[in-house]
Length: 466
Image (cartoon, rainbow, N blue to C red; front, side, top):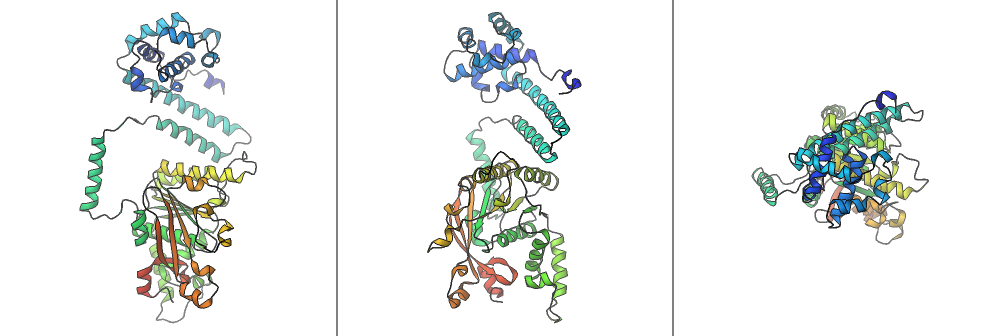
């Protein structure tokens, strides 16, 4: 810490700290009002921190919070080991604190003063921490910014009133929401995926949900996620951020153009379009690019993305463009951004999945994370995936609000005739749904476009068999 910063007295209000502690000594019931919100770290004076910790412990054990109990507790070095000889709390100091209680207008107003000073100190400390980390030879900008964002976000949470809400208020808000859904004929509370049967199960993609979309290789999980992105962005006009750790942005865009234009994905990759004027493939290509140009989709194809980098980028996109959905392809290609795992991949993936769930809650948007499945599927007679097939971590299932699997039976069918019959079908298995029902949905797999369609619509347009 530099000398200039050392010379600055951090924001605090000693009288307010003494006043609220004195008020508690006089009237223990004040703790009933503020104990869940006023933390001992909010106090600036170490003596006040120690004293308030004692008060909380006594209160939680249903002991009187008075001078006798406090003086007995002060003999325990657990509370006072960080105090210097000049900071000893004796009976005279306790009496001085009681005398200050008259300065407190109300416990709530005094609490607000103490909390505001704590928040100001946090801002100063975060700035100094960033300075020191930046001056270190091994300081990494992304880690510095992520740590600063984390500390400031945690501090901002302290500024939220978390009091109980009366049932009447919740009922009023619920009625307004249901009434709006009824009168506006809104079918889903979440963002519709555009797949009719799937939306009936999920009710769309919901805010703060972590959705895991898993499959064995080549089943089409990336294709389905990309179709989610296209439909959400182009039909619902909700911003979508795609973090692709496996495919390049050019490959993803080729797929999007193929789906929107209806032109075979092989032709898009090779540029070998039909010369038949009746097919107008080059015109279709231009029209598709024009439509996609207006779609609110952002693609990041950085390799080796860490959870730290993802959080920073996602926060920035949310702030600048108010994105509505994040898609990550795929979870096992991410890293924890730390050397502390020492090869413990299970723990690293657990931390990543937990970090994604926390990020979904923080940004209040759904996050769709793609995931690989273990080879255990291949060794069973029934190839349909199960929750236990999620690779490397049981915490993926625990953290997820929704777990879906992509399964195409044709991939395992050895009989050519039966395989052709099943080629255009795919099952989407909703195996976990924290806030709703589970089930299986059948979609059409459009091989030449490498995408999925609603089954009935696909049959009507005859795109499946083309």
